[in-house]
Length: 560
Image (cartoon, rainbow, N blue to C red; front, side, top):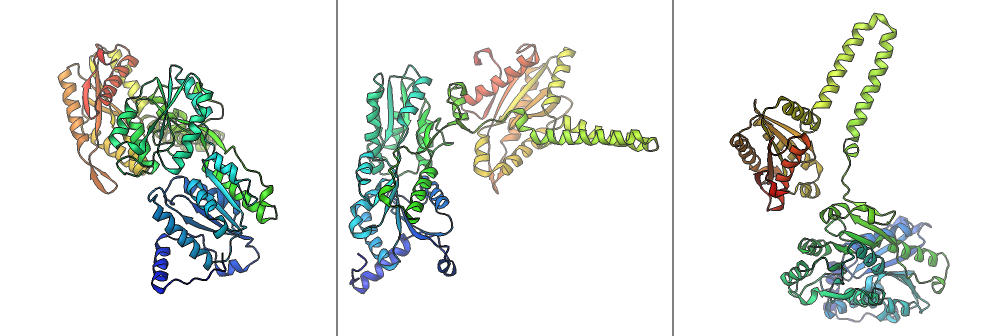
């Protein structure tokens, strides 16, 4: 192939050069001095079916690079079939590869990622990669992969998605389910996974296997079909990179659309999308597949024959579940397998306040040391007493005030409630927090989130007077005590609080409106004990959240 003579006209040659600049390789460059050293043990080309922006690709590349190390030259080519899946695109890619391979030193190994690149390599093996070992990874079409591996120059790792274990676990969670509904499309990868999905029909005779084909539905039709599914269905996301309207999606775009529409949890068998709405499942590790392919390449460059390296049919997997999605659907961790990875874990009190507790313990330890030294020296007794007084004052302040917002903390709130109840005078409790506060931390970072909480506390504290006292409970949860048994008075404070918190916040350098849900309860009519009263106010607040958010309401029994 490399002996072919490039005889194109000058105009076509120029077009190809421009095409290569726009579409060509993203390369891990090694300096001339490095290439001249004896540390360079080989040259590897990785051809991806997609672009670097596709979620699985960086994970695969990370695994390959980890296995190859720094002594191997690694180049990249991207087919970008998720965005442009046409015959013209494939032809252009072929022509660019043919020209590219004529201009560079020969590669020792070619690694191909996912089905489109795998099929391209097999189709052009004799012309472009003659007698060059080809290692595939992330391939979903099992039959083609097994057939290709009979070639002495081809081996790799199949992306065997864990349909069986995930469906079985989902059926344990929803034993009343009668069908498994897969979200699929008509892409090359989707076609391969469609075949694998329906193979499992025989393993679950009590479940009907059906699909929602995104490629033939508009976005609204797709959302409507998903929203209509109830607990008689197990919803399994496999692939949704296009719809019938001609839209193409990265998983980060498609997954939230589907999961927000679904009234049941969406299970997954791939790592991409975790944390974006999936409840979880037994998922494939894209990084580990890349690492296996890289390890195979290293074996070949170390002298092993490609034909001696066995095909890996069982790709690496692990159970992964999203705690926040589990809470949304009232699913406990008790039903999950051992050694499961939990993401979006809600920290316990000790986990949330670990640094504060450590500081307190250090302060106490220092105090004990100071006391022991000063007691031994009677001449320094006064200094010892002063040091103890200062430290006690600091400890008292730490115990009573929230570190971030400088307002009263949860402990003071509970003490004040006990005193109010013991005094027997009627009063009101207000609970409030920001709607969708987690998105602020996820999008803008925790520093911006902390700044918003400080501003919220400042606005709340400006309303404080002899009747109205504010506290921070935890996270973005705040509360207030109104020393009045008159609902109208409590309502007026709620309204002032609501209006103050509706004013725009400085978020990411821009003014942005944030919304607040507020609930209130009265003592003793809404709860005689401390816990009953707090629960009533909390119920009122979450009633607002369940019914559109951004509002306020007193507690009513119908809210339970």
